[in-house]
Image (cartoon, rainbow, N blue to C red; front, side):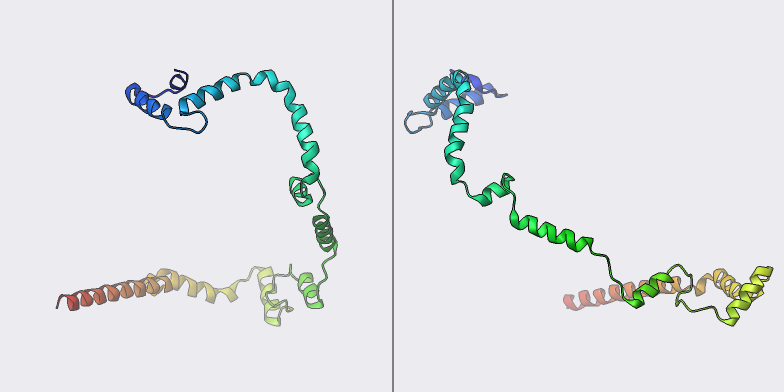
Length: 188
């Protein structure tokens, strides 16, 4: 009754047959699973009476067992400091605290990194002349570049991207033709 009443199954006929089978499973000492379950249930119901002894038993057990526990295990639990780990952490902190030392070339590159010239060279005479023209509002030196851009923008057939797409399409067609030839060879 006790073992069968503990379980809930949605299909009572299947559940009862399964519980009857499990209750008859042989177990050592007790003879069957049902007898073992009843015994454990009775003993577990008496456990609250002995709960007051639990802290004393745990403390007493640890009193005898703790000295036998390996120091590495204690360090892994965090009860003891790890001297090797502390030394490694100290070395890493010292390494991180060191100032960064840069070579002369690196220092020079950092000092001129905010300048917009790619090669960090002073502007040429032509660039100085163009800057003076732009300061006056004269952009005639850029008209040639603008005209080239407009011509490319108005002629979509000459666009490099379209040519690449056409080449990809041609490659796909060639691959399809090769596959068809291979299929024809297999049929023969």
